[in-house]
Length: 300
Image 1: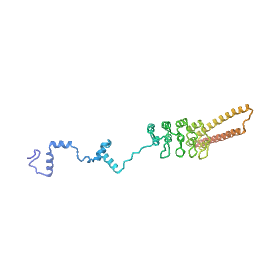
Image 2 (image 1 turned 180 degrees about the vertical axis):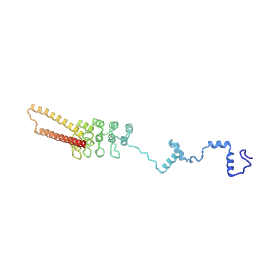
Image 3 (image 1 turned 90 degrees about the vertical axis):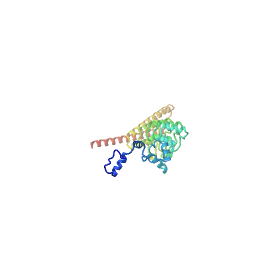
Image 4 (image 1 turned 120 degrees about the vertical axis):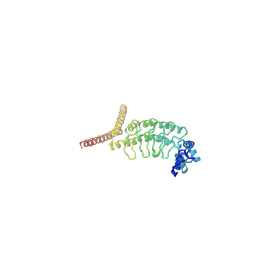
């Protein structure tokens, strides 16, 4: 039976036969082909791939499932490791530190680099983490690697509020590391004048020496840091004035008791004043040199 769409008088060719077959496709076949997904659109899934795709919502595509399967097969996936309390204090939040402590972690544990959680918290200036650790038994004066203490970390990095909190929590203001540097010396070398001012107000030893055997005032003068020199010199004058006033009070008491002020105390006072004058002259000469350099630069 001839198709109503074909002409019986025209010769039959291979192209016409193909067109004739395509025309004879029934309507049901067309519907079935349009609704049935292609069998070659996705690769066949194994049980392992199906399990990974169902277990992880992110592996919703066959490509990601296959890549994850290959990584697991060859052991290329990174192993999930458990962070320590010291690492949490270094880069975590105060809430996570509280959770670690609640689970029984040691607040004085030493990490792989030799630092305590409190030192790590002070290195990044996190007061909340430091408070949590101290309230849970962290030793505020515990020496870490190279004798580094929390106050060293806070002073060297210029965290004024943290330095005040540590001092209020009875941190040793004269604690020394393995290089015999105090927090004051580290703050002077790092040029944190605000921290230096706080430490001097709290009564630190301004004549301490570190590994280079030089006092903080002399170090600031040699570095031509005039602002740091003025801060240290101001506190030095205050210390001398308070010392002289106390000596005068003692002298009046001694005079009332018909005694004289000892010669050694007078010599000590005069030597301190002479040393202070020499240092003030050095600062003054440094300021003159700087002003001269500025004037030469402007004239050029």
